Length: 144
Figure 1 (spheres, rainbow, N blue to C red):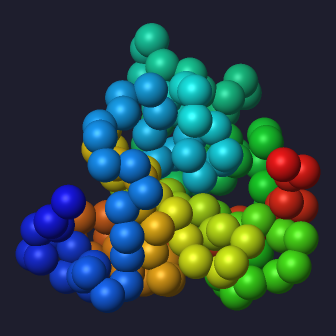
Figure 2: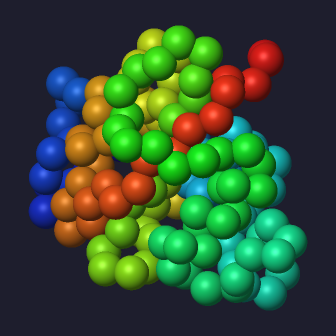
């Protein structure tokens, strides 16, 4: 997929690769960051959203949603053996995107209804489309 350079100014062929080329409306970036690929996480009627989590698009609510599956806030996105990290992107108080760190230290994102990509750093997606990384979270990497 060729990304709009105005929306994703840091993303280019040298720092990402497509993992799935076809669209997939089964799950979104929020679910994918939590390791879920069979449900769409969104705080609206008809979509999955963790119990006891405010149904709004605030970063603070997304943090609570991720805490429900074992994540806790942390200071950065550096690679730690045995630890899975996520990055939450925001533009102001509302979240825009989330990405998950792979065991290699690279990151993976689900691009809305489109494909999944792998990118070098969380900042590769920072910009007008998703805002900036505002929160990092981590949990013990689930056994695969």
